[in-house]
Length: 102
Image 1 (cartoon, helix red, strand yellow):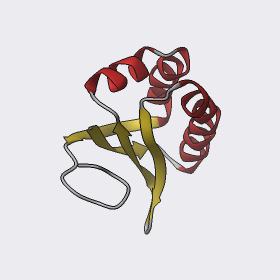
Image 2 (cartoon, helix red, strand yellow; image 1 turned 60 degrees about the vertical axis):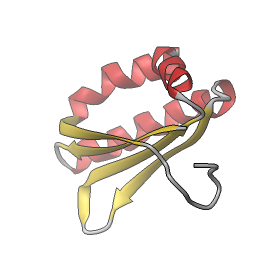
Image 3 (tube, rainbow, N blue to C red; image 1 turned 60 degrees about the horizontal axis):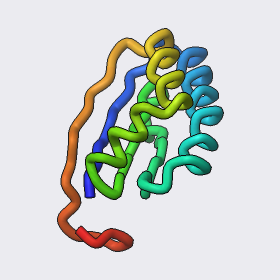
Image 4 (cartoon, rainbow, N blue to C red; image 1 turned 45 degrees about the horizontal axis):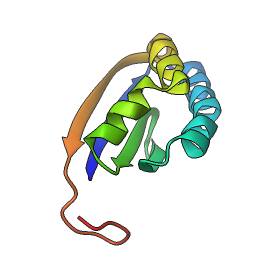
């Protein structure tokens, strides 16, 4: 498995709402067209209304690479920057947990 955690920092409340909408229109393409994407979850951060955290888990690195090439993902990556002041990415390797083989 191959995973990542991404923390996004939105510019303001309007940008956070627009970012959430962009995620909402991107998610169906991931659900419907990416069998190698095991988990793709967007989270609000309690007490930090301008932050979002994504947790993504893929069957393997090839599935992640395929995800990055999908039209809906390319669109998301292009459009997201207008709503953000920055982002941080951590690549992770699951060891053990419920719902994963590790």
